[in-house]
Length: 610
View: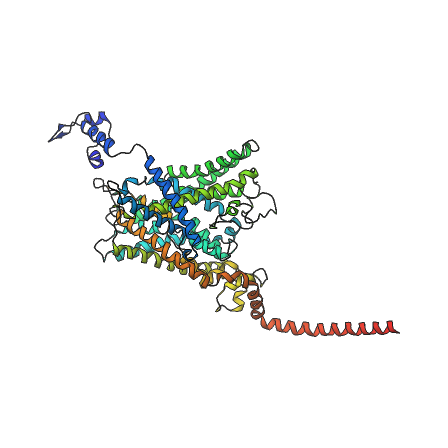
């Protein structure tokens, strides 16, 4: 019906349409949009839904969410099933609900589906904003170079490497994916969701103060914004002109320009909205109730998101920037020297939550820019802001994974075993290649920047993460971040952290369908949905489950405990010749001093006796 509506030029106004006097073999003449009105009435009656959510939609969603939480609780009690990530539990619950619903006659799973825009506009923002609030800004700043390299360059490398591998390998199968479609798949599958890895690291005693932990958390935070921006830039090329697989130089430069404009524009929108929100809270300080402080906080957080989306930029990038700004200037601990405990700004963790995916430790925020100041929200607002952000993020993430499992049996999925295998292999290989390549690049950057210090005790505790084949003199001149990245164990964790999750599924749902009339959209969306869902399930269950047993074997559980002992041994071994000479000299001087003191003490005792 939509194709017929467009073919009849029903989008033009009545006057222009009537003046054309087009002849037709069947209707003889189109007058007053008669045909168009018939098509529109038929579409309205049979095809269009007046409401995005019906009572049946919402009831079914509530039941699935409640069952997911019950399943999580049961899994946590069964110790031998703790290796299954919480995301995987939601997928399993969705699959069971989908199978049960399919048993009822006259029931279609597809009739329970939501609008595709729901994922990008409603479910993703809470997840991204909560992560932006939870990340420790102090630790993020210390590792900003490595995080930016992995999140920006790493996402680009993964996107194009995955796309090229899928395109070349698919040419050997009956369903050959064009280059543009392959790159779109590479972009949407490059978004990582390492919640399971962070949870395992937390159980091993690591926190955001550890380099490997903040690297994984920081990369996943910025990686989402970059992947979504690249995805939107590539999807815009589904315009009917580039679907044949050919790409000109002007189109490549145009896509690069669109990407840069979207990134810079989104960051500018976030900063502008952040400044306006600061003035809003400044002039209404001491007058807003705690409830309105919390409500205004989240409303302002979403304002730049929807502004950027309306401008065809990246709302996720704006949301991350707004989260950083508001955490530093509005929602962070105030005053010099205030270092809250890990539970001070995240009281919800004490309420029995077993999910420590993003608890903040130590000082959560860096100091504001010189000449600016932070605002003081009420203590009640400070306490509940992070709790509400955590709750909404948990609900949104559970809903997305349950939705994934629910619609695995949908007719809109095309499960091609060959392309699924190619997609999963491309994801894993590109991730491993990217981590190893960029780790060497980061080490080169640190050396070029002169990131070296004298052997100090403050630097040494982190050096236990350095591989044994590094020379002692080189160890003393490595920064904490560079030493950790050079360690193969850290690189292994970064590779394992490449789990695919909510963002990838939300993006594949927003791939435009192919329109045969205008030749716009993607012809291979059902295949992409099957490949993406298979990659998410494989990485969540296989990689996430294997990490539960592999990470403790790598020795991260004992890293913090052994750091001091290993640091002292490195200090002694790394400068053995100098220490030996110093010890000999100190020993001779000490012996002379002791001899002199003993002699004086003996003479004093004799004089007393006399």
